[in-house]
Image 1 (tube, rainbow, N blue to C red):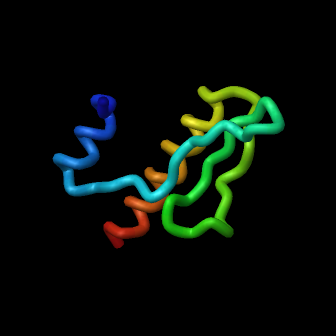
Image 2 (image 1 turned 60 degrees about the vertical axis):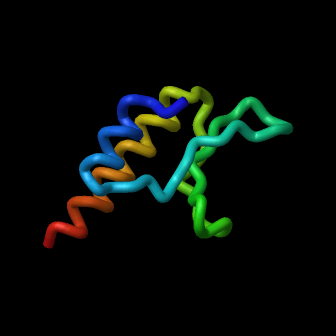
Length: 67
């Protein structure tokens, strides 16, 4: 089931290129690219912190496209 935020991004014509994943051997949440396995947005101790960083990344990415 998609979140309301994902639906809003899709309707606006914007798609996420990164996701939040839990590392299997550590209690960390990492921001990773779906398309580029070498890129990382960083790892955080809570899922909320990782999602906040993901939102920042998406905001800057879309600000860059508007120029």
